[in-house]
Amino acid sequence: MTNLPPSDAFVFFGATGDLAYKKVFPALQAMIGRGHLNAPILGVARAGWTLDRLRERARASLEEHGGGVDQAAFAKLLDLLHYIEGDYHDRTTFDELRRQLAGAAHPIHYLAIPPSMFPVVIDHLGGSGSARNARVIVEKPFGRDLASARSLSDTIHTVFNEPDVFRIDHYLGKEAVQNLIVFRFANTFLEPIWNRNYVESVQITMAESFGVQGRGSFYEEAGAIRDVIQNHLMQVVGFLAMEPPATTYRDAIRDELVKVFRQVKPLGPGDLVRGQFQGYRDEPGVAPDSTVETFAALRLEVDSWRWEGVPFFIRAGKCLPVTATEVKVKFKRPPLTRLAPGIGNHLRLRLNPELSIALGARVKKPGEEMIGEPTELSLVHHESGDEMGAYERLLGDAMGGDATLFARQDAVEAAWAIVDPVLGHATPVHPYQPGTWGPAEAAAMTAEVGGWSDPEGSP
Image (tube, rainbow, N blue to C red; front, side):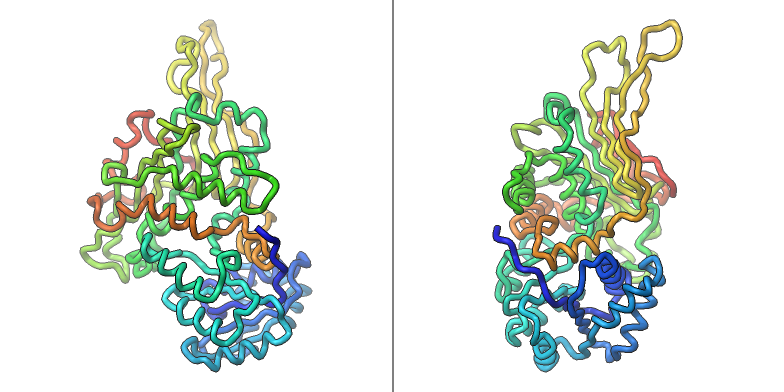
């Protein structure tokens, strides 16, 4: 992979939208504050706004979602910010964009808009000449299934070459998720036991204690599998199961992720339990007879030399007891069962809401008996703080031409191929009470390894 030149203009479509308000403006101020952004910023929208109104929108965004207004960085943001108002279907909107990009040799276009508008905007970017020597950032979802993912890719590739396409999944920009790679490959003690000879099972839980929060219409189109499993949690599987990446070229990590996804057997109905919390059908925008899942638990197998026979269990759901994302790697029990009755060792990696890594070990229980009792050795515990935000990191990487933390099309297709057979109504949806760990049917899935490991945390 060749190094791409840095972008010298940042264009974001959907400048008046929710994503820009919650994520983009805070990221832009942070980038400016660190000295990482000094290029024209062009907001494009069809809301009939003015530049002054967009500036006020930016200020409100930073006050609510950006940790406050940094006066120096915000002043520079206002100086760099431009506004183009127009209909995405109207070619003159893009002619004006081309005119304002006249001094930019390598602009980058961020499509913070609904996927249904991607073909229209991409076509006009190409036709107006605004895509010449440019890159594009595409916001997930990358399709609804394997076929639509391929169709979306074909549309993008009519104007942009694959090296110029940056598919943004903010989960990959999180500090804790990137720590999976560093922890795995920067510690000598871990690699010898990170395989089927020592690992009994792997569990990944993404729990949310809240519901759909007024996004019923969106969730009716998505569901838990499409919303977080096919993308976020499959990436976590990839980081846990991948082979050591080469250090000599940028695409090494993405190459290894693709290998993992291609080694995962496609799911069948027996590998999945779907659930829906009671009360979901009463949400605005939700069909009264909806069978969309708000909870999903599944069992994966990575058919590789390293992982053959080791089950990977994934579950994600809303209205669960806590909000937490956690990985639990269970190791096989040692042979001296008299000294270590019950469960064996484990490695726990908490990814959200804070980063923590702990090793489950056994020490002698106080008293006369020579018997072990479980304890956890905390390796690291980082509260959420001043680390670089996911969007700040990813937008900065995209402008710098570094695609390491972005989804590549072959990985997108390989991940869709895993879940494609069980999308829709391939399995029944089971009701569960809010505040529980999903439907009872999910418990049987992990019976072979002693059940699910429930993360602790605050509701």
